[in-house]
Length: 397
Ligand SMILES: *Cc1c(COP(=O)(O)O)cnc(C)c1O
Image 1: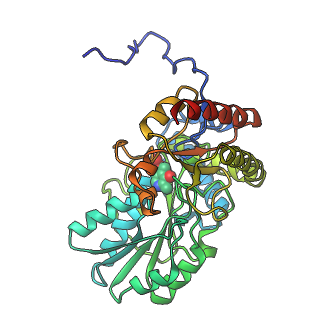
Image 2: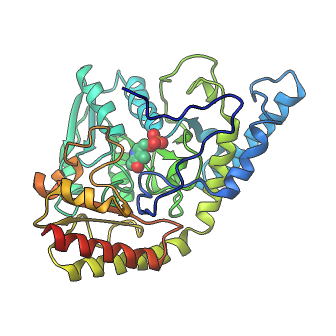
Image 3: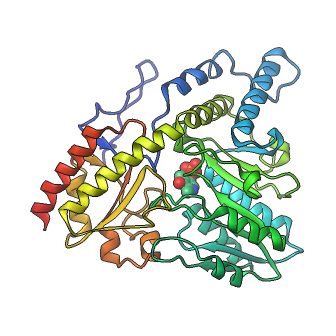
């Protein structure tokens, strides 16, 4: 089969993406474009400032180490945690794996029971299932039809041998916000560690994990207008983890591997910048989201997925009644860049486990659309989106 990839010759200028077909990008929960100011902040650290921050015997290395320290402080300050609490990783998937496996391994002598929720990201569910295969007991709690966790059910699930509870801050498909502070209080009273996958919330509102009583927090730079391939796990003081990558001993021994300084510079800068305009952005995108939802409701035959008020301002997820999911998405993708279930799942033929957990049928789940609004979203784009969906539904229904 001929390769679809264009050849990248060494002497040729790199080939960029195809000049964009007129697609309206509404998939900011899958990833966000990197802020140009962030790209500019990273630039010198790819070339002139290329030295390894672990090279402490020469000046370029020391300069890189000084910048790494500054970026770590910037990141820590944005999260109101001490710089030592930040463990840099390749993203939220790795942070979740380190948190879940690392904590369970460190507490092996204390118990072997983990509690999580049916609507978690695969990067939480799969490490938990992996531990289950190794002999841990796993409770996966259901959610109500609005996607929210029932605290009484959580309390009933806890056992004397429970070592970890993992609940996400904001859902990547339906944007639902879980009651983190209440969950943290329940865990703290029993000496159970509390991990939060914060990939969808960090950078979108001010979020102080230690203040909330969270022991472990995962975050990912590319979800808040930063570079891809970098993230962090925040580890509250006193919480012990076993490293999952062994080697050079970077990140206090918790995550070996040469530190990608340009990416870390970008991560810290992106978080500062994303938080600086977060309140404004949430207000503006909340209005656009409401405009979209009202427009969709007026077309008829749409159901909102997830709580109407306990959700991210920039997320809307709906099921369309009376249409085939595959046909709907092939019509929408001619103009819109939206997701159905989860873009993070490589097996896109399977209906979303999140929507099934809300009680949607397989057919409803397949005919669902996630609209993820972001910095670049405009009123005109929302108007065009509604117009396109209106036209397509007339054909499809
Ligand atoms: C995107 C996402 C992840 C994965 O993050 P990466 O940095 O891409 O590995 C994990 N959890 C949630 C909730 C996400 O939205």
